[in-house]
Image (cartoon, rainbow, N blue to C red):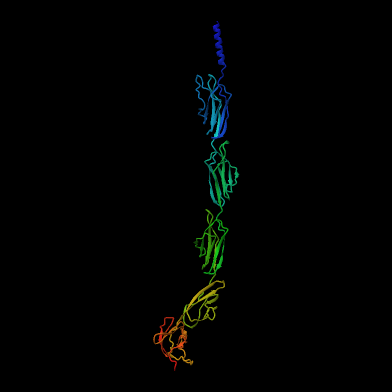
Length: 466
């Protein structure tokens, strides 16, 4: 009887012990958070569980789970030492969820609630496309962000090269613009998730160039033909001078002039000429200036007459013509150098220049050559003279010798010794040699001329005592 009583007590205690074991409860996890990739660390906690935490699991897709702590199959037998009640994480690169596996005694294991660590990739501002260069207002267009990670929080613009920025409320990846009138730089502020620092995109620019402008041209003038010169100038230009052009047919055809300066010098033009300048600012279309007119005063033809040949000492009229005020040079030999047809007396070949000033102050000139024909010597040469001081036939006489300037006379005695020589002989030899009277006798002469005339040779007798 006592045996059965004891057995009953043992069975009763076993049943009581079994009934005191509760079903496994996975409990509740906590510690979910949001981070930027590789900049995170934390701990997932577990509370309200019944049993022993045997391991934790993690998943990056919510479908497949991987044990992150000590693994246990849940089969009968002594379980491994339980891990700590919680799960740490560090430098996660993507969103990861965690849960715990809990078992109480022989009851089936239970899974805890899930806590996720939300991880965002680092913000990347990306690249803005759509930069343009415009001559004058830009017109309409858009800028677009590509390659970004995250969403734009706003855009910014700067008109001072990036020194200061103005916020633009726009959270899309496209920014539209219309008629930008000055060069403007744009950038976007991008953030990926609330935990990641913002990043600034690359910059794009709407470059607005002032249109080419040739400005104002000055220098219109009316000038004298062939004797002129001045400067045509540009002012107030936008851009650079690419060159100039000239036209002598009233703008029908143009001749290029290689000159990158704002000033163009012209000189000695003989017909009305038009000038323009070509100006270009960077890549903008070129601009052509207004026309500068350089007109030529109307002029009359002047003439100094035809070239003429005359004999020495001839008197004749120069035959000039034209409109205006005449002046001849040289004036020597002319009775009046300020008329068109003066009387001229010339002894040597002379070039006369007729200069005429018209009512516009323009001066023209023309030349005429008056060639003097040298006379042929036919004068009588005395074959004797009596230099005895009686005032009669005291000098050796050669007829008309005064009309032959440049003559050269040489006299020799009978022995061939030179006793006298003279350039431009003028009937003034008195039969002396170095101031001493020569003896009576016969002497021989050679008379030459500066032109091609044949020399004259002969003899002359000196007779003093008769």
